[in-house]
Length: 363
Image 1 (tube, rainbow, N blue to C red):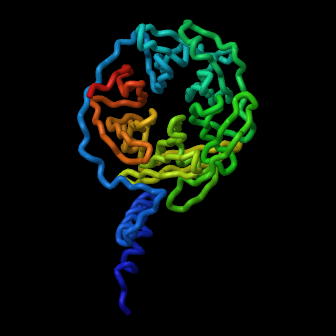
Image 2 (tube, rainbow, N blue to C red):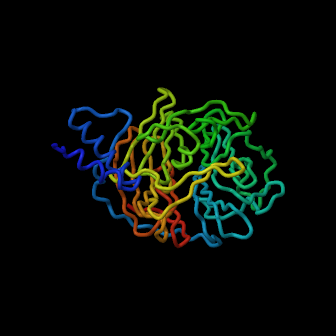
Image 3 (cartoon, rainbow, N blue to C red):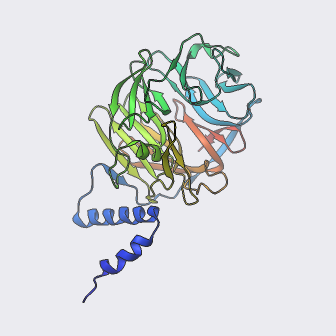
């Protein structure tokens, strides 16, 4: 009996870990597509990360920060979520005046927050929305009010609609939000703040290997979402996969951009007794993209590639810049670990570092 190479390979393939099987499966798919002279129009594989350009970071002196871990630019202001401050959950730094103000006093009272997780700004009204995942609500604050120290929101705090276990949010059009949520079979939803209702479901599977579309899959491919009103596209950067997802609202299509590592989520999703979806990391779980931001021309990402068991796995030194067609345009290597970034209208990048500093990228 003759045993072909594939038969010899199969037992070995089965003994590999789930992550490694997915890795080799993606390689084989890629090779088959290349051999046939075709490619999947929805999947773009970046085969090689070009040599990175080393860049330096310039510290911006901002007294009073404790441990900022999220960064959002709204106009001339940088909003920073601070995990270690005992007084508030958000600091606002004015890029023009250099002044630092405080908002979101910690607590459960009016205008207070204890679980601020993501920020967004509505379009066109420029209202800052804070997603408190502990109190399960959205807190709204007009942008022009954030220059007042200890501003207390007079806007209503809206509870999320039943069935939505929300995570990342970003501003969309008509003062709506895009919300990554465990909502039925949706990858994310368009959410109406005023009516507290789901306007539209965006349904597709982030799992390009099996194509499953359920809450556990969506939880495994958790990430950060941003939107460009000029491009009419959103981008999701997956936290536990080497994967970006660009959704085109005009064409109702999605494109997947996979890096050369080609790894998929290595943890274990689960449903709690309260019906909420969770995700447990294992020793071989790898962190993918840490953060993403965008402008009208480019998508800016921080990539980790570190095992979750390593120190500072949620930080990275590799900034990958793509255009809205998913093409890799530039790779930057920073001189310090960074965890969050955003870009201003001139293309200048700002980051938060492991040493709790606000820095500017100097190219």
